[in-house]
Image (cartoon, rainbow, N blue to C red; front, side, top):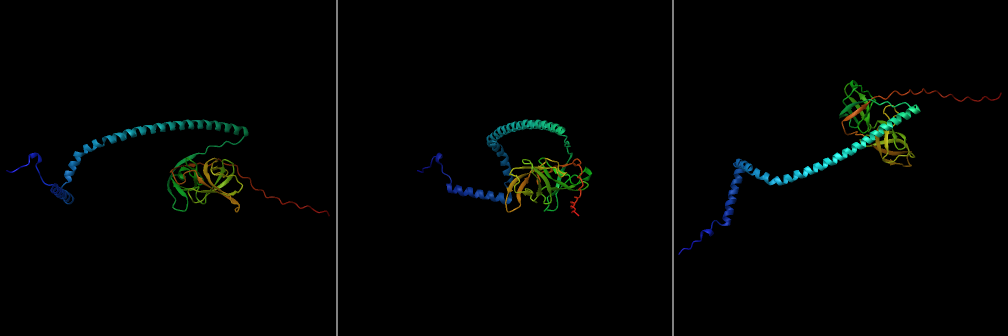
Length: 298
């Protein structure tokens, strides 16, 4: 009598046979897709069907990220708003103090009979490109003779002095930066009132003070502004900050270097200042009379 297993335990292909069958099927599908692109349409259809499931699975993560971004953005905006309000109050207070100082200065000048400082007009310009000479620190701006730009006009940005107009064309002008080797700016130490000459070194981040005695009071961090004694730069414009002071008794002068405050190698918007008010002419030098020799007794 033949014994047959019940249907619940019906046997089939062995696991090894199944592995071989599915491996051969996978190989055939890979070859058909790689060589003949038969499964491109099937892949696109599968992607369309699976896309909603993917979005649904990623929805909790995306929702959490959006909620976190909302709170972060909200808190950041609140901090920025508080910071801007604080800055606005500080600027308003500073403006009030400046107005009061201007009034007091005008009153003192009136009492002392000192000439009032006339505001200098300015013309907005844009830096177009740098000069062709790679060893010179010069730029070209989009204002020239047609815009009443002349050689010698100082050029500043929102921080301080960046250079001086050295050549004017009909619609363009050449500006020599304060870091150029041949450029000199008369400056004043704000802390001590010491006057000096600031010279460019050819390096965009380095300036040097020339012919400074060893005993001169200069410290790291001192602010240098234009002195205005040259008749070109208005007085009080920020120029540089002292970064290094070297005093060696083997040399006659101190080695003082500084860094420019204005964006001599950054930014595109500048202001070309107008001419300063006419200064009194320098008196003519009178020749010194030689001392007379005393006559001897006859």
